[in-house]
Image 1: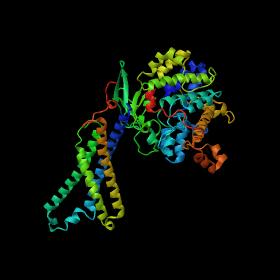
Image 2: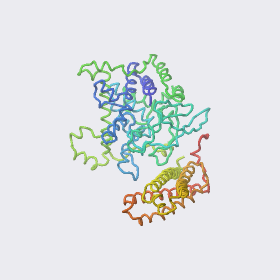
Image 3: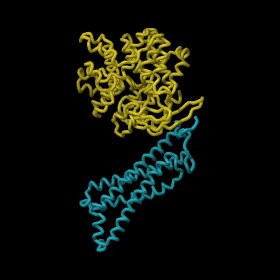
Image 4: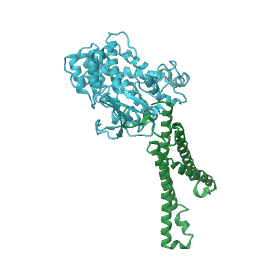
Length: 400
Length: 175
């Protein structure tokens, strides 16, 4: 998702959940900051680099395809942008190496999402913002994995956009171009994606690069064949998914502020749909590259206050100038603590499922040593039992 | 859109498309390989031709060069024709399956040619060259067989001689 949803839509959801204008700004700022908190920025602030929540293109180009680099990439992207739906998914006749990646496929309403929201409960607004970013991305980025993988994230040339006009739907075949600098032209149907790379661990095969920016456009409805789908076609309905993301964010924020006791998967704030459904649909379904203005207008109507434009530099001085013992109390200090907490929780869960793609928690290495690690990974296969939900396959999608 | 038939059709079309691309590349490689062999190898056109006293004749040389070039073009064209036809068939842009006869011919010719590798004196050509050539030829056979068998499976699934696009693959159509 883009700034329009992570910043402005999260602000709107926060207001609807009962937060004040100032609290909503903090939450939405944190949600958007997840897309900007790179190692480079943390170096500049002299902050712990393990708190990074994203990677710049140059950082990714610099990283290799060795196991440690892949773990670093997976830790960040799987934790913050492609939250796995089912770490215990099953697929017949597949080796462990494939299953490790298959189980990282992102999707909404997984166990990890519940843990993400519960982990943010009783913590800072920054932590809530991070949770909202993760929640929103589970809808937009579903069916892709936050690890470089050709056999999971690749798509082929059979990629069609479904355009609704006057109540009718037509299909237009998409021909991608590989031009990172040229903006997408939605009228002419010119979109960019990452170059096809047959190498399994190439960075070009990370996340939804092969589908371009389609997952991040709220208006887009498209169908394509994912590499993991065994020749099944998926229809991705972003307007529907974005609506669910928004209403689920409102529900989750109500859980976090105590209005609702506990967060459960697959629950949404239906009152929002009843009251604002038409308005939300008009923003979400409007064919535009970015919907900042529309979401901002909606947010300002809800709160009656002005929403400041997002500024990456807003809290940097506060953090840099704070004393060593006071940094944790600054805005970015709280964000950094929340980020480390969330990343650690997700990495631990991935490791406990028998998957080393996100690395091994440091505490584990120190406590059990190498023999213990090997025993953990190869001795106990499923520490938490069989798969509960399964990946949302195209067949299941059709049944829904 | 995801019925068993649709899934199998996509799978076989993909097989045909990928094998078609691979065949074009193998055709390029085969042509380059023979070009290098005939230009520089121990069995080069010059060394063979020099056995004949008429080699000094310019016309004779021109004929040898032209006929060699034509041979390469024909070899490459055969691979290209099969490959491009397979890709077009997979995309639904070609109905005719005449290219399968050429593919079958090439498959038989390749299989028949494999035993000849074992008759070559490997001390002259090098055992690694022989092994590499055998592997490439086996791969070619597998691709050709894949194209032929996939086309027949598609026809069986659709139950008619030509093949039409399934509803799910219609482009630009109203839904």
